[in-house]
Length: 85
Figure 1: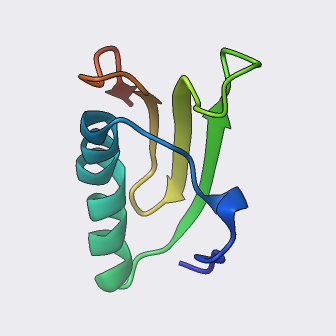
Figure 2: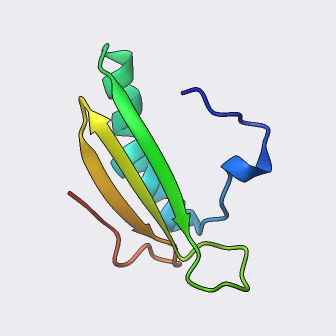
């Protein structure tokens, strides 16, 4: 999509299972919709529950358009508590 993939401001540290959960529930479906000619407005926001940590406690991921899905990815070792609507 059109983000700068060189800027560290566009990256957040995630546990492996949280990253896979986000990939399978949002990133892959978004890719498929866009490749099929659909459209999306996407907003991804890291949530820092611990102000002294550079690692987010969760990620809020919203996509509106052809997919129209919102997810919260809990950044823990198992991605427990993550959900989409």
